[in-house]
Length: 420
Image 1: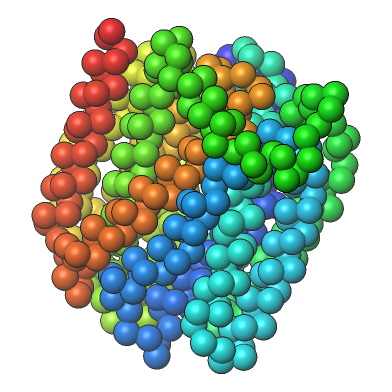
Image 2 (image 1 turned 180 degrees about the horizontal axis):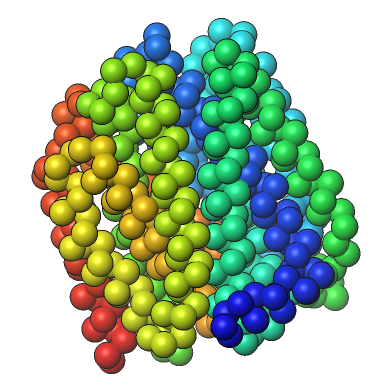
């Protein structure tokens, strides 16, 4: 099979493999850390969690970064990406260790959220840098396949990290602090692995007279405007619409995730521990969907084109999500988790490919950072909408139908753009 042959070629590329190792360790640590946070905030027996509390936690963790996100893009286009991976992961290891200390110190919740916010903020530098660096280690012909393998492998690593977190939590008698310390160790490993790459390998190509940090920050607005103009050019119209479509699909994913958290916590389980185990199973099934997307998307996007594949993914979600979600039963929801994992990751692979192929290397950091900001704002907005619509047990037919309508709108819009 051509895909298998190209995959073997990719894995023979030494620098692609090393970049992949950094992603696997980094996102594996993310999975560990996120499960620990979810267990501490949502599934602690002493906490009576509501959708509003979940939305508030998401806002605290994500919205502040959304304000600082554009600065991250400007800095990514000036800093060596390899250095971002080294120092960013080392900083996250230190901050995660601090989070573990706060968990066992019975400090006010706001101090815990500040620590978690700092880890999340650094994470955006890492993920945007990994996406921007990928074309530096892979040729254009295999960029679609690389976008299938690399982010999907990272998602699977995050899923595996989540599973490892469940195992450690079981061994450590429910200690969320012990799980966070495991995440800190994996962040440390990711930072040390980054040292195996040459500082200049991953770009960007710096100007002979590189501006000082103060100058770079003072020109942020102008640089961002230039990046938006770069993306808005007629030749990049498909990339702009792909970003809008993926943002709306992220909104749908966020709303469904909040609903799933509430269902696992109350409607589909008899105890917080049972609910956490059900959530872990749902995330594992969704991870299998991400893996399936990595297999299917290169073939489908190659035949249809990335834009049309996004339209197909959104259209399939519009039809399948209400059919599987409205019963509010365990087996249909697990099936939906698999299919939405496949659909969401398939659309993201295509969006990443369209953006990477359309923008110049000097703009990639800024545009991918804006991409992350759109993701965060959409996710928090979805949590806020879900908090207004969800009843205490998480069952809301209105929310399920609303999400299906948004998926349908995305499918129609992308199909129209591709026809034009």
